[in-house]
Each structure stands twice: as structure tokens, then as C-alpha cells.
Amino acid sequence: MKLRILLADDHQMFREALRSLLEKDPRLDVAAETGDGLEVLRLVGEMSPDIVCMDINMPGMNGIETTRQITAAWPSVRVIALSAFSEPQYIQDMMNAGAAAYVTKAAAGAELLRAIDAASRDRTYLCPDATDAVKGILSGHGDETKGPARIGARERQVLQLVAAGFTSAQIADQLHIAASTVEVHRRNIMRKLDLHSVAGLTRYAIRNGLVPD
Amino acid sequence: MKLRILLADDHQMFREALRSLLEKDPRLDVAAETGDGLEVLRLVGEMSPDIVCMDINMPGMNGIETTRQITAAWPSVRVIALSAFSEPQYIQDMMNAGAAAYVTKAAAGAELLRAIDAASRDRTYLCPDATDAVKGILSGHGDETKGPARIGARERQVLQLVAAGFTSAQIADQLHIAASTVEVHRRNIMRKLDLHSVAGLTRYAIRNGLVPD
DNA sequence: TTGCGACTACCCGTTTACCGGTAGTGACAA
DNA sequence: TTGTCACTACCGGTAAACGGGTAGTCGCAA
Image (cartoon, rainbow over all chains, first blue to last red; front, side):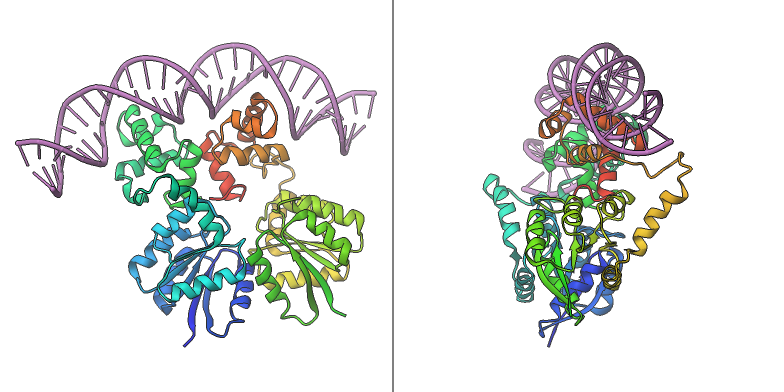
């Protein structure tokens, strides 16, 4: 019984190439591929793959939000994050979203096979690049998940508008609250996410699908 | 007589996958691969490949400069730009550097085969994404209103760092220029792109792949 | 040659972001 | 009931962004 794999990446050439690489392994079957986050959800519901190899950058819906929805709706599906980036924030976001493994594109193809093997056995796996990247985090503060769950509804609303490029005064106007209150929300968001600039907030918002990129 | 190909891309997994894809074609032989620009030059001199598939983002030396040096030193070697980006500026830079073809990673694998075929016959080739991207330039060269905003190399560098969350002072330090100069670049970028906030710059940078999202 | 544009650098000023406080309300759970 | 937390609002201060000006050097093209 082959493992049925769904490839999700916005680069068609990478999908085709990776399919060629994976299908050298007779245990694997690349059942489908797509470059759109929304289509990933449709395909997962349609064909119930065993494993989804998920990129973070995708049109329609980004890989983090897509992963969150897959693991919520189809808990038996294993998602392997396959990203060009090894920043701790992405790794953390992806694993919090329910991914079973994280492999960077800078890693060897063998790493992806290890991740697929681990995921198929209900185990988690991080490629060496990823483990190196999170080491600093783990040693620093061993606190709990600091995903989007800790962001309040109002804070999320403010974050959206900040990332959209509005000033505090403009946001206050749109939300019918005082500008000082907007800044409090912004500061609380920054404290919770350990970010310190509008650029960081914007990147976080885009990563988490709060604003269109 | 097989075409001997050198793969240059900073993602090992992509190189391995692409090698697997290309070697399905019996006319092609992936003779070597590397992820470092300087090593590309060494390998080209060492093994004289017929074709180099060249990414733009690489450590050591970026793909544009590497292409420039290859075509200057070994005019018989054909360089095919294989990039994630389809911005006219990159296409123009690569073709000016002497590339024989430009294919985006969003294109189909068949596009790369067409490019290899064209390059081996001393012809140039642009994949559909790339031709679409340059059309905007050609049609709108009566210019003004919303021209594709030609961002200079230094400005692009500053934009990357701004979007990464650095302050002007930090950027000045990294680029070894005055903070005031950094702010001039920032203002010029904002004027050219009609943006007015760090959030807008960050979103633009992410949209265009200048920084990881 | 002249002119243009990119890059460099500094001046000025205003606006906004950023980082500390304090404090009242309502909802909700221990 | 008490405690916690989100949301609301304000105060003050420093740092940075934002927008305008001037000006020198350099390479490149008309």
C-alpha cells in the first residue's frame, strides 16, 4: 500500500521536479499537486491523501493557515512543512498549526524522505536546519504556545489595519476608539509576539493570512 | 552526444529534484550541481558544461554577477536563468548579463526543456511569465502614471532591510553609509512606488520576494 | 560636451511609532 | 466574591519615520 502524497507549492517546476524525485521511491505515490492554498483544501477533502507536503508561500491561502484548517478538519492527514525558510518564527507557526514535520528546501532530498517516513509513523521530524534554528528559542524561554490564540479579537483587528498601512489615528477613526487605545493594542501585540516594528507586524499578519499579500 | 548541464541553485532539494526531472530526458546529462556562486565559476572552468541553469539568489556570488562573469570568460557556455521572480528588472539584468534564456520556477518543467533546446541552438528564449512581465515595460514606455517603478540596486537593498524590520540607523551600519542616505533611499522608493508607510514597503517587498514572508 | 539619473550626505521640521506608567469597565471563571 | 483578562482611555517621554530642501560625485547617453 503506497503512501499517497499531495504536493502543495506555488512553483510548478518545483512540484514537477519533486514529483520526479519522490516517485523514484516505490513506496510513494504523488496523487496530486497544486499551487493554490484553497485548492489544497478541496483536494484533501476529495482524495484523502496520507501526507501533504506544504509550502508556506502560496496564493489563495498561505501554508500556515491551510495547515491549520487541514489538521482541524482531517486529523488523520499528516502535513509536512516544506519551506525555503528556516526562521524560528515560521517553524513555530507551522508546528503550532499542526504540521508533523518541517523540512527546508536547502536540505537534502533524503531529509524529506525521513520526514515522510516519520510522519507516516505518527512521529514529528525537524530537519537539521530547523532544529538549529529553534535551539535558540528553546534555551531562551520554555514557555507555552504563543500562536495566534493569544491574540484577542480586537488586537487582531488592529493588527490587520496596522499591516494594511494605516496610522494609529486612522485606525482609531475606523474602529471608533481613541488613538491611544489603538497604540495600547499595538504594544500588547508586539509584547505578545516579541516583535518591535511595523515591518515585523506586517510580516506576521501576512504570514497568518490576516491581510492579503 | 548528451548536453552537459550544470545546476546552480541555493536549495539542495530543488537541485536534486530538478536533476531527477531533467535526467528523464536521455539527451540531457546533469554533470554537476552547486549552491554557491563562486563555486559555479570554478566548476564551469573545470568541466566546461554546455549549459548552466542559474538561480539568482545564491550565496558567494549572486546569479546575475555570476552570469556576467561566465559569459565574459567562457562565451561558448549558455546560461539559462531559472528564477522564482518574474520582475522585469531581474529579467533585464539577467539578459544583459548574457543569459540565453529566462524561465521562472512558476513555469512548467517543459518550459525549461524548451529553454535548454533553444539555448543549445544559440537562440534566446523567455518563458510566458517572463514575456508577459516585459510586455508591461514595452507597452507602457510612453511611461508615467504607473510605470513598473524602476528601483535601483541600492534602493532594493535598502528596501529589503526596511522590510526585514531594521531601523535606518541599523541599515546604515550594515551598508556602511550614513543614516541620512538610507532615509533618502527610503523616501525615493516610497515616491516611486507611491507608498507611504513601512507596512506598505514591507508588503511590496514580500509580494516581490525581496524578503521571506 | 551637456544633461540625466543613481548614489552619496547633510540641513530643517512635523508626524508617528515606540515604550513606560495608571485606571476604569464588563465578562467570566475559580 | 474575588481574581483575571480583554478592552477601553489617558499621561509623558524618547526614538524613529516622514517629507521637504540643497549639493557633490560618478557613469552613461544624447
